Image (cartoon, rainbow, N blue to C red):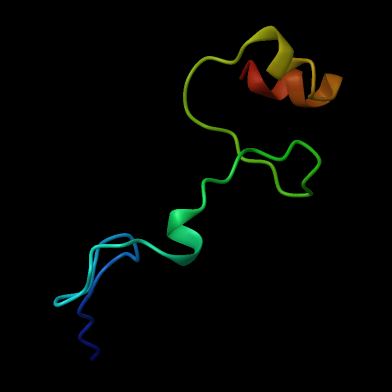
Length: 63
């Protein structure tokens, strides 16, 4: 049996801290279309988004 206690998610100040956010949480990261990892969210896709899929992938989206 394991007990896990979440102390934070990295974007809030530690107790006694200055409230200043540093590191990865302070850096806004945009979407990299050239990345080998691509994420697809829930919701309707636009035509530009659908165009990036192969014909087979577009076919599977309709199922």
